[in-house]
Image 1 (tube, rainbow, N blue to C red):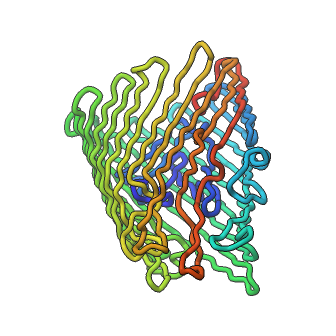
Image 2: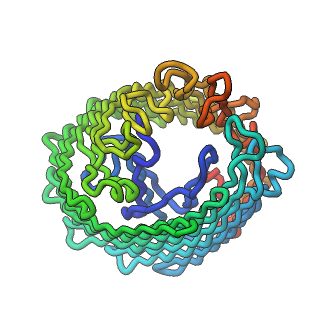
Image 3: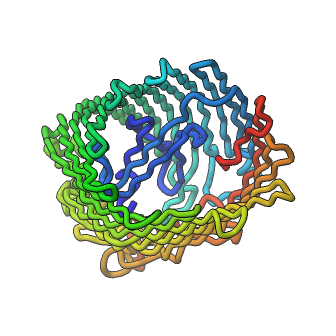
Length: 555
């Protein structure tokens, strides 16, 4: 995100942070998020300058708000080429229970569609979910959620310059997540939000004859009071506590095991003041303490929004953000410093008549980034920056039944990371990124047609056969995706989708041999997609008293 990798994003579920929010995978094999999008009524994704309520995230925050007490009792059935899912919602007067289960297995699909990976066992996963929603009264609502998930894969990854199938990789994962959250109106001017969340993640990984087991446990408790003191002034005061436990065991001739427990705490406060009806200023401060390295950090936040005209507003934001080192780093350096980033943003947004335009300039400066120094030891004194701008336009009005949006972003980023001793453009941050998405409803056919096009100018990579570092770049990435949703009945959807329909061979980088050959050159292998195209067909049925209820908005 804007020069940062995926680990710099924190994910919150009803205000509570999720540990291990993505499934475990291996190099070059994509993974997916763990939660069904149909759970959520709102998704807030901030790419910088976010509230003092959120911490331990350098680049972005994804906040997911689940549905309240549902409107009806219904059952949803999904039958797909990659598996199936079943969900049932039981609505009571002031509460509801939702139970669901899903199973995905790519083995039958991959038996038909050739793959570029050497699979021994295609990826599979299963999950069960239980949710309870209860409105105690008109002022208080309680939500609970639990999921258990299991997943696995088994493949061989060829090594550059070596014959045979390569390294054998087998992964098994078990994941449990539970939370309870409360929202309550304490007084006509005060609200309370809080809850408790627990995450358990277990990985069993085998690399040839080497076996590794990792267990990660996280506990998060949080509470916040929000007060509206008058029609101009509002405050937010809160705190949170994290308990983290990590264990790693390597099975060798002499097994090696290491564990670490860590506690983190934070207090945050924020005040919003409306100078005029059109101008608001928000200031915040967050204090973080990390027991593992005995460090305390203060993170100030400041933002201002001014309404220029009907539908248009201009805003600016500044903030300092910290993210604690991973356990693997703290084992080697107990005094390793938290990575930090300072954000500067200017944003213009115009929303009117079902049209949205947004433009944003940003600059981000990094300190204390993790990289491997010349002695091949982890080091937390790396630096970097990211600067650029984003453009976004969405239109649901100009063409009847058409909803489309266009996004362009320019990112100029350099950082010390991995084994680089100097600032380089990271391999996960292309400079130019374009996305075009559209959905068109055809009333005569009871169908929704969708399409998306994604493009970037290529990813930088380091070629050991050339002088310099990070001196090469892949060919531009491009993917045209098409989908069609047909409703023979309002509650029945037949959905078909093809990704990368033009069959472009996208390459994301290269793996190189550890040693040069007799001619002094390092052999290479491209890192590409699992298949040139991905085909999907699904049937989605909703059973309810409301015969028009369906899952179309989630496709």
